Image 1 (cartoon, rainbow, N blue to C red):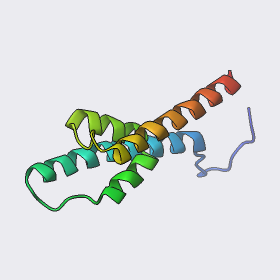
Image 2: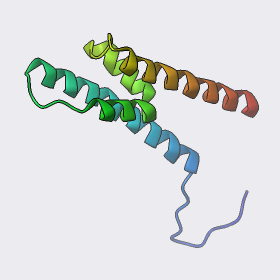
Image 3: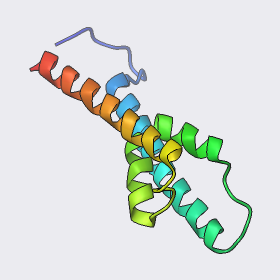
Image 4: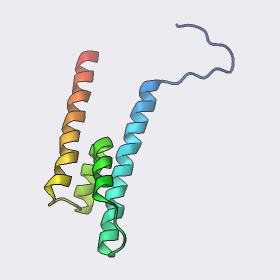
Length: 102
């Protein structure tokens, strides 16, 4: 059953917090690519490429999905390779965790 906790103490499942944070980073990366595409179409101030690459590092699935959905930065190899590479790494880690847990 576990150790009883005192009244008023809230426990947090750290795994759920990490997964939620990771999901939010991917959602943010997705929308950042969409926002940058909209700004590119309007000739407005753009998101620096360095920022897009950093978001791709922390939210590779969202970045890749944003690139595909908005057809943005898909011809630039430097920008395109980062989310694909990190998505592959993240998928491999997730498969390893699932394999070890099961």
